[in-house]
Image (cartoon, rainbow, N blue to C red; front, side, top):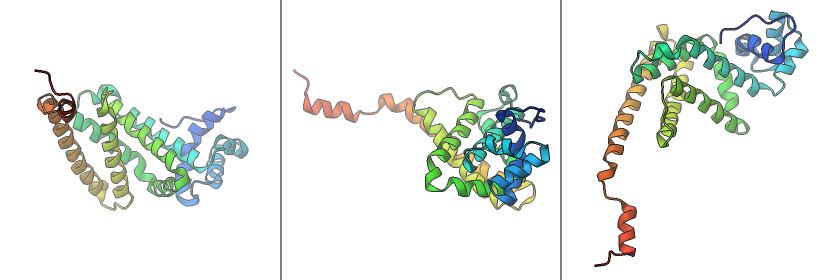
Amino acid sequence: MTPQPIPADPTLDEIRLGLIGDIAANAAFDGWTVAAVTAAADMHGVDADLARLAFADGPVDMIDAWFASIDARMEERLPSAKLAAMKIRERITALVEARIDIIAPDREALRRAATLLAMPQNAPRAVRLGWRTVDRMWRLAGDTATDYNHYTKRLTLSAVYASTMTVLLDDESEDLTETRAFLSRRIDGVMRFERWKAGWSRGSDYRPSLTRFVGRLRYPAKR
């Protein structure tokens, strides 16, 4: 969400929300470290000990808070009412592009975050954070699937989003045109896959069932 002024007697949650944007900016130079937290606290006149306590779980906790703030800012830019007027492809593209625009000023912080999350001990947390983001995008896009489509859509978007962020890290083109073009191509692929999957699902009732066939071999119909 849009950063709010930190009140005079803040809670730890208010400190997290108020500082995380500047912690990310400082992480480009200091990494996701206590030094980044302390620098952000100094900028806002927050007691450094309280600020460190707000992020007591360390670097991945800071990254978690940053990603959550990006999710919230994305939703602020693209509320459901605005997305409702778009086609599904446009909704997903707009949501990912909103994240591109939000993250672009802090690409070095993202690079350092990706390095930390790639460490084996952080892999489970990294998966959860990625899933949280793509789940939020699909829900904002209006997806209500509860069957296997719920999972395939999110797995597919996870791959698209992760690869797009990788391109973003090294994109020096004007207005990040290379990243946006890459995203467009990947979304085209997703939409083709979704159309194929829908067609396959509709035709499944008319295809031979291997299970039924094997069952008939074992238990032939009585004449």
